[in-house]
Structures are given as C-alpha cells and as structure tokens.
Length: 386
Image (cartoon, rainbow, N blue to C red; front, top):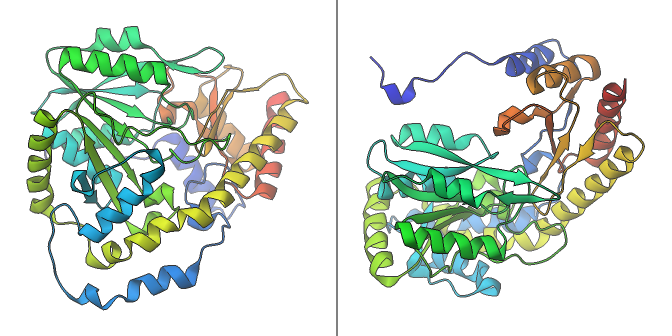
C-alpha cells in the first residue's frame, strides 16, 4: 500500500527507547543535546517580534513564487557584509529542509546521486528518500582539525553524480570549508559539471568572532546556498528560510526559472512571516551575541573539566553549537550513551547519530544552560573515569 521511499524502520531505536523510559518514569534528566534555542534561556525582543506580525498587509494575498520582494531584500541585506547578493537570485522557503527538496528536485532524476559529508546531520537520508535521490558519502578526516578528504570525494564521483553537499560549518564537527578546499571543490565541480549545495545555517557562529566567507555569491560553479532564521536569528518556529542561487549566467538563469516554477507549485511561505522578515532577520543582532557567549562559556567549562582527566579529548571546533568528545571505544556509542543516561541521568548524543564511521565519539550541545552543562559534564566525566 505504501511507497518504497517511506519504507523506513518505524520502531524507536534503543537510545530513543531509553529516553522515553526515563521521561515516563519522571526522572530529572540533564539534557546535553538541546538544539531548540527558544527553550535554552535566551532573551528575545518580544515586543518587536510580536509587533512585526501586526502588519495589515497580511490580510492581502499576493502570491509571489520566489517570495515577497521586501522579504528577499531583507535576506539580501543580511549578506551585505559578505558580498552582494541579488534579491532576484533568492528563493524563500519555509525551511532549509524544503530548500533541499527543491534543489534535489531541480538537479536530480530518480536514483541519481548527491555526495554528502560524513559525519554530518542525519536529516539528509530522509530528504533524499523522499526525493528519490541516492546519497553517496565522502569522508571528513580529523588531524589536528577537520578536513575534507578531497581524494575520496573525487573517487566517489560517477556519471550519475549531480551535486556535492557542503555543510559550512559542519554539524556537528564545527569545521568550516577552508579557502583552499573551496578552490579545489570549485575546480572539481567545474571539471565534472556538478552543482554545489551549501548548508550555511551555522555560518554566523564562528567561535573566534570572525566573519567566515559565504558561498552565496560563489560565481565559479552553479551553487545553491541554504540558510534561514532558525539558526541565524534563533527563531526555528517562525519558518523562514532561503535558497541563494549563484554561478555562471548560462546555468544560473535557467536554474532560477525552474526553481521559480517549483516554488510556485507549492507557495508554502505565508504572508505574515514574509512581511515580518526584516524584523525577524534583524533579531540576529541581539540573539547571536547571547548564543556565542553561551557557546564560549560552555566550551571553556568543558575544557576546564577535561584538563583534570586523561580518558577523553575534545576535538577541535571552529563554529556552530556543538562539540565532539573522543572517548575510549570500549563499547558501542549507543550502549555508552544509554549507560550514561541510566547511571547519571544525563542525555548525550552517541556519535553514530551523526554517522561517525566508528565508535568512540559523543556529541554535546554547547547552548545548554551553563549550570546544567557544568553539572552534566561533571557527571559524565566522573562515570567515564570510573
């Protein structure tokens, strides 16, 4: 009765079952996996956000496939310090997930291939299944920092390959695509006639306070840069994201024309959010300093506690909201995470959740409230030391 593309394993895995059991038992669990900033104790400009939704223009229906011009101009303004982005090269979506689905549909016939980094966020698998796209992983290597294994990436290219996905910075490794890697990837994609799809939702969260370069105006090859206010302004509930298309004119214009028809087919983005776009995008100015302060505070606390033991090591991280711990691989990461939950009442993600190729990794959220983070790390390290 159901399509093969939805033939997923629907029963919860053991780690999820352990979480459900802890919740059902009413146990107080310290959550070191939190990704929802609206529940992490940050201060939002509530009056400004709510006032932005009182625009009487929301009572008028003006269907614009790429999104209202005023909203696209607000997004273009966001990129002003990173180079000019033309509002006409922007397509607004409700989420980066929808952005991926539009671009996959644009580029791929059924069963054609897209290269994706490993480790990375597990969302890709479901998006690819729903669009009948085949994912082919390429590895990120760690040696005093993360690098793209460019040789392996090139070997993974076949006549069915249509695009390379980059996550800039990667989630959860927190590694940005370097200038040298960018040049090499542009050259490789030109040679093989491939598009680049870049997820930049965490772009603004460089831990050193720098302004990393965006791919949104990459003119070397056909490029689709995805982002949105879920992370940029820490407003995941507002559902405003975008695709910034760039590249050679002979490829860019046909791509935008086709994307516009795809977007027109769904017209998914609502008017109130689009009319509030300028205010919502501007919220980044007040919320990002809070998030970066939280990330740096928790990272310093993690390093302070790690310095007192020798069993675990934090891997280098450049940006984003997460940290990777390398731990002794005496059991599977799933067994370890379940054991930590049972014995310490601390929730922490196993590495396999992010498709790490081997055991020995745990993933921590750095936006957890500092007192909870301090206590949670202390409990976890005490258990691992024992």
